[in-house]
Image (tube, rainbow, N blue to C red):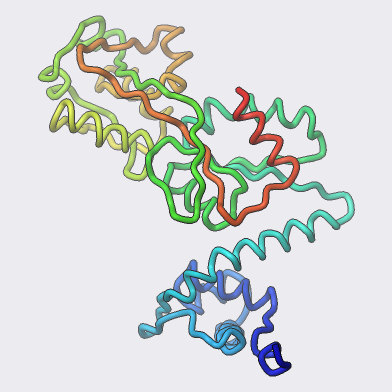
Length: 298
């Protein structure tokens, strides 16, 4: 490679950070606000990077930039490199420890991971834990963008940049309040279709189960509540106003304490597979790799 070619392919981490910000946010103005730089500086850095690479990374559509094929090829590698640079900087900072960054869908994050994280931290005393809990779509976005080291999901959604590892099985259960008319009965398809339901929001793993199983096996149902919280759905069901189909992990204590009861049905209820997602270009640190081993051993 001659000197001219070498100079053309040089770029900085700062330029890559600007490229990633623009790719995620869609405009140089939004990227400038995010990284606290002027819009002119962001545009100039992006132009320098494209000139260095000898390729345009975006298609210009007015003020908006649409990432093109070149940009899509570069994005995961650039994000991975920035992630590794951040780890190196933190590793060499005096007195700092690498955090374990986990993203998990609601059922897993609220009912399964806390005990596992406490057990892991007992042998990693100086490592803080950052747990982001959201729906499956949000978890996938966090892992794809390198904002999380490991993701835990409940739904079938995935992404080409991710590796999906099967994890635990999760049995779904229909529940009602003890005072609900369907409590204690073995109900049929018609009774389920006529009942009022509380379901999760679009993008969640539980909603994917509802869309696939309820609407396929039961047909059109009466959706009285569409809620972004597992605990809120349990409280709505406990009020006697509706029923729900939920993870057995989320229902364990409520069923044991008796303030929710299982609604029996001759229809075969779904069993879903919980999964772990990792970025293909992500290099796990020692602590994250150990936590992953513990999860697979449970």
